[in-house]
Length: 132
Image (cartoon, rainbow, N blue to C red):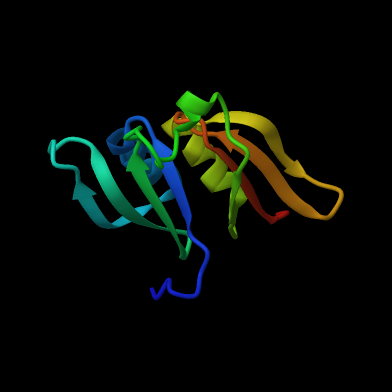
């Protein structure tokens, strides 16, 4: 997929390797690329395909000019939204993988199913799709 004309979220995570595993299990992510830092353990950069889109992530490295993880910040100001055909299946898969519901997946006044989850790394995901 050519991402040169897209907006791609880039997450900074304490424990990025565990996050890769979670995103594979919870959201069906496919790892398109992964580069380790010089220490051979932390992730310098990973490129994931989720639901037809891209998501980048790396471990938190600290220092000047870097970004901080949700653990360091104490929260997040961003919600990552997934629009899917079967929201119930993805919702249950994410909960089974370790996500926590913060807004139940329910039919909303605008006619879609919608809910919010927090992943084990502090990032918020909304899942939406058609009502059965």
